[in-house]
Image 1 (cartoon, rainbow, N blue to C red):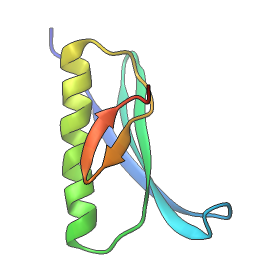
Image 2 (cartoon, rainbow, N blue to C red; image 1 turned 90 degrees about the horizontal axis):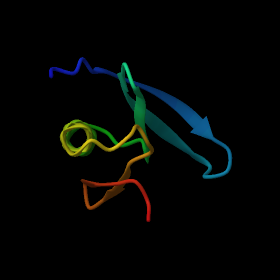
Image 3 (cartoon, helix red, strand yellow; image 1 turned 180 degrees about the vertical axis):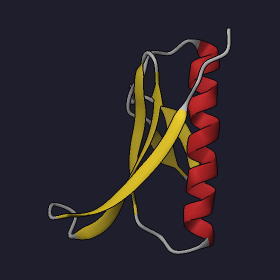
Length: 81
């Protein structure tokens, strides 16, 4: 069964981290997958976007409910244990 996913992101200043962060979201009819990462310029951000999209697709294929995703070395690990 096909799943429609809308990817979006926005930037903000996180006072707790004292840094700019980017919230990546993937919205489906079941809910949203999301990840918040430090803002990077150029290639680093492109790699994180691609990893986020791949991670969301993997979660959907495994049937995981919408949740927060975590990064490690530009790979998405899925929800925390």
